[in-house]
Length: 134
Image (cartoon, rainbow, N blue to C red; front, side, top):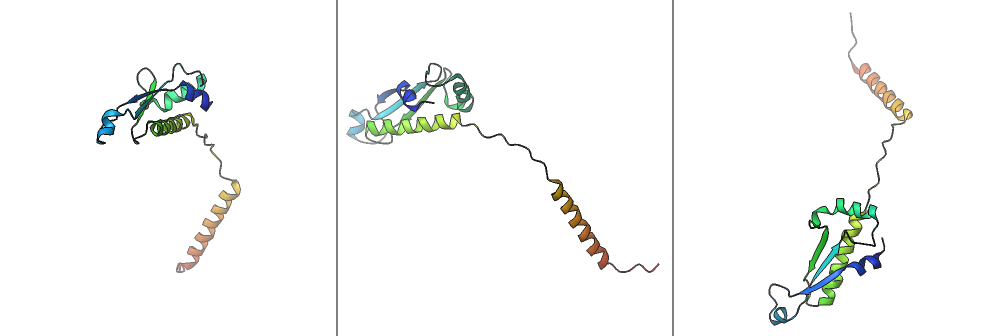
């Protein structure tokens, strides 16, 4: 995965931010909307695309486009930086492949030790009983 190539494929749109903020909200387009088309991406291999389709399917639209918004800051530039960081985190988490757990056998020495300990405890308990006078 080439980060610079992926970032070059992103498209940004500045939109007026909603909510409180006074005159700044009404006249400045500080909200940033990031869109990334997974189908047309040249930076990702087919295997990586398949991984992303499965891992981040809930975040994709029906056309396999990832859309992220950011209107946390008053500055459009800072919002753009924040949304790029979020995007890269989502992509990294989507491409993460967990290690496959290998089933291990219990060593024979451990099994023998457990059975030996059980027999030892059994003998101790047998010796605590009252003698049988038949």
